[in-house]
Image (cartoon, rainbow, N blue to C red; front, top):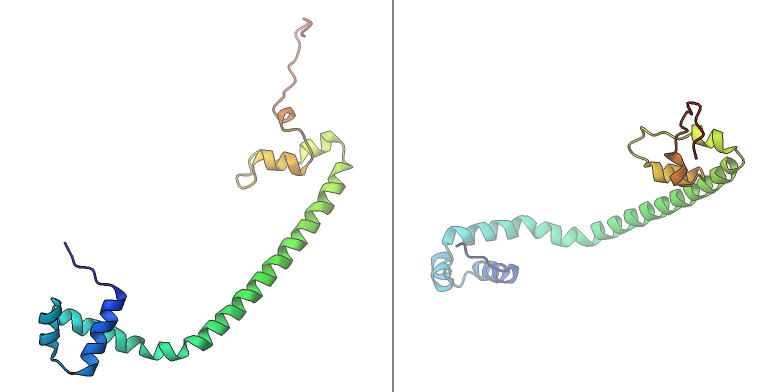
Length: 139
């Protein structure tokens, strides 16, 4: 089973390596970690070091972009809600037969129940088909 080390332990080991009070092999033996692993942790730490000083700028920029995106999405939601309300009012004035003609039973992305709600139709009435009579009175 592989040993797993915490980020805090790795950071502590890199600090010890950078202090250069002990050799890499001494640190490895003292903490039961392979010297190659210590070298990799040191390389990773040194690669990521410049990003520590630029994070503040990136965080502010990311936050501003996120806020702009949220504002745009909320305005889009408001616009779509207004359009939907207007469309429902206009469709309510259509006769039921015309609203039934607007149903698209093959539309995969918009379920029939949603279409019925938007067109102000009773869903249970969508499945009714008139049966032809053969001269007998059906009840």
